[in-house]
Picture 1: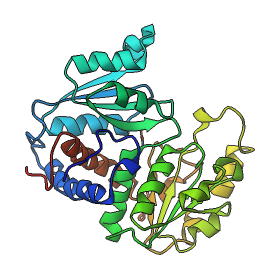
Picture 2: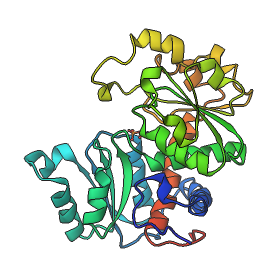
Picture 3: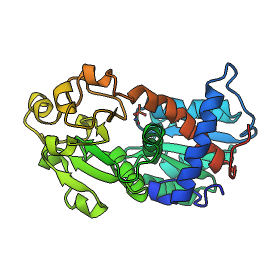
Picture 4: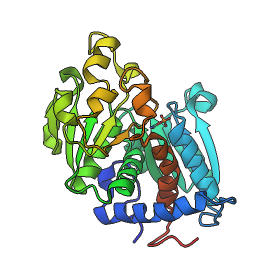
Length: 311
Ligand code: CP
């Protein structure tokens, strides 16, 4: 089947069938990355560009590894060490990369919606690796894939997303994907960190963490994004941790076998305690591994691959 949309800017760009194909192929990719020699020639001859205007550890490294494991030529550009620092605009930077042969451009940018400028300017396919407070679709794909590996399906499952919903591109993309797959999504945080009218996205909203945790199948904690907050949106990190941080006592309200997730990077001791992050229910490290497999499956589809991956 492959992916019809030229670009992946929002998770809404993928149909449910396309998402399921990516999940199916991610399973094969996990087999490949568990081998001694993690190489397949699927993307040989393709050029993948990582264009990052914001810091990243997980997303950037996993896209780089995903491209390299599949035989693509991968180049990494960060704003601080490129001609962006001399004032070159986004369109000129992207056009320059395309003229050098880029087939797929993966971009992270602090401005919500900036990927639309790139997608219109380029024939190359564009993948959103996070834009401002808008979306982070590949994070949601890896999160949902991780849930499905443990739960079989997310349909009818209670997924509690807790924390800084207002600034979270991870929350928005997860809401879109989980709703499409039939999950029951709850969002929870202090009133100042919940976007107005968020319930219109088809989620249940509560300021009460205990209500969000009650019988949850999945507890997804979000990072407090202090770098995106110009004014104090809660009194102190200590108070935030008390009301909205996940600890072992609160986690008992969720189902016995609930999954604990966090997209990373974590503020340990604020939104999650070290005991819970490293506890038996935590799948946080699995999320990281699955990030490589999902990005391989996505690059396979965006590079023209259709149906089951052949390795
Ligand atoms: N989850 C995530 O996007 O992490 P990085 O900022 O390290 O890429």
